[in-house]
Length: 567
Image (cartoon, rainbow, N blue to C red):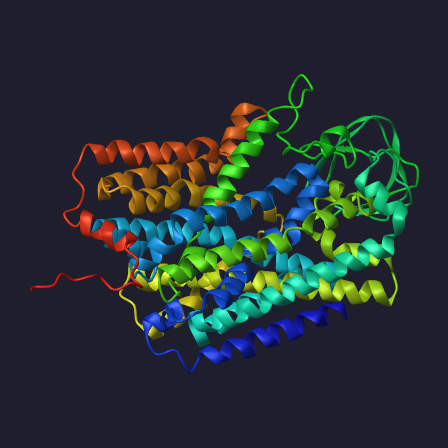
């Protein structure tokens, strides 16, 4: 019955989105809503679009899995908007472009660069869209037992139909509504949880005790193949079979297996995850993985790389950048970014509440690999009765709203890249492209049930930071940038981020600096992309219209240009 909470969200998405149908007549209507969205309404839509599965579920899950250092993620997410407000928002709107590839061609006069940008939009879009759909499948499975594919297909169908019907205007209405919905459905259950758990649990959340023994008979459903380390013999029941005693050493729990641990049993260690409540878990830095000598590793390096990716990556996310093109002028775009900072700041006060409570009440999730579900699993653990079911339903609805709102913006950016930047666009083709793109992403998400939502979204930020961030910053603030410099720099950024992360997965290196720099490359890939663009550009000449393009970017278009009197 809890799954029925998703139905009103999906229906509301389709009905609200239908308001955009009557106003959709041109490509500009589809992509940028004819540039008539007010700053406050636009900021609500941007916030709704930005608060994805990684924000609604992933941050709390990362706290349970890796410790309080995961709270650096929302710091980076929000800081990115301060940088966007300062460096990008108003000048980008003044170009009059419809998409990021549009900006690249308008600024540097290269059709080849435009096509390269469109390809990078597709890469970022896939990296970001797939975890949205997989999270939708997992949440529905958790709360209702439906097959994983049901949530994936429902999410894909809802966003593609809404976008095909109403374009950007439909997406704006839906995202603004869903931001308010997410804010209410995230904050109200958090307050209820804090009241319901009582002072003892609240004290344990602030002063956690290391999770070394199971306090009760505990069932762990493993979602991925997991290597467990036992320091002492442990008796478990696997998939309902008679109990067996596992000796100390390494053991593997296969994906899909159910292990039942008796109360008082020692908790196994998991490779790549911190034990909730341990000293390393409480450290206010991101985990960099264990080292051979047992030291704390390179936590400062890991934290800096994630902050680089999230803060600078925000400036390069195509579905966020296209949103500023909907503003009437540059000043409105800047106001949109400023209001967004406040709205995101209010939301990000609460993921830590869910993460800290989850580490106390559901610490076994760190074993199963299902930490992304901690938000929707907490209410039923606190109250197995009707109140728990009610707040689980509310959080499920809010989580699904997060998937749909972010997926709408991403799908719009992907559709624009295909049917506007790569091939000549018509309104009909844009609509059909949105349906086709959603189908492709659904097909990619169906076999990706074991994907780590937070990790894949972070990789999208790393790619955006290494490609579009240098293009935008240098394109807006440096007149000497050339088309060749931008192309080479973006290719270097793409290879040193997406290519290197893929190579790291294949290589399977042991934890250490090399593995860290491959898994989280933003700390070096972003400076490398900037340096490459500058070095190659200095060897050439800027486009002939560079000066006039820079004037257009930085002159306030809302003020009349003074004219000299001829008398």
